[in-house]
Length: 77
Image 1: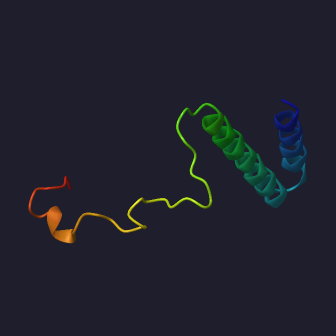
Image 2 (image 1 turned 180 degrees about the horizontal axis):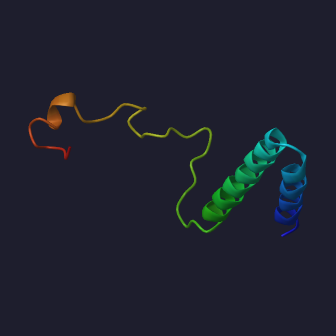
């Protein structure tokens, strides 16, 4: 892939320049790797993707368990 080739060229140039430039280039390379991995996982997912206007929890963001449920053996610790 062209973006991976370009980022590694940037890392090699930064390696010759200075440690701070190398650090910045490696951060960018890590960010690219994370983004590509995330996109790949989402593209291969068959499940629904959470939309911005949908609640993350059907109960309105509240947990349905009470704090005492773990103490009474209803939930695993």
